[in-house]
Length: 102
Image (cartoon, rainbow, N blue to C red; front, top):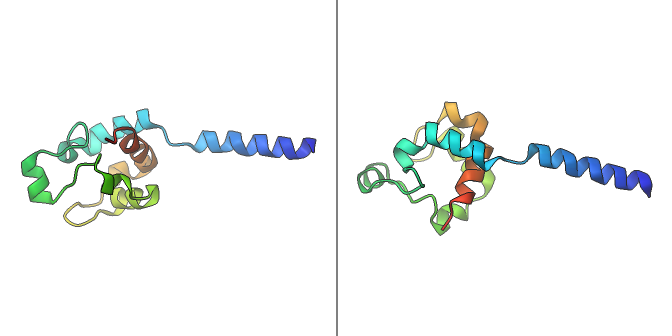
């Protein structure tokens, strides 16, 4: 029983070390995403129309899985090109996106 508790404790510690960091995500978002998606996830009307962007706080964007959102950041989607500079921070950017939802 004791060894089971140790394994569970170690697994929980490892998971917390790998958890996405919304604060780091905000910094990466500000650097790589803000110019198109706006400072709070709401793109300007012109940018939204030109690039067919949605508000990142909208229910349909927030309903996407973390994996799907990370794939969009790294691979692009529609008129959005891949963002190589943000690829390593994609999990953190998604955590930040989750923190700003409506």
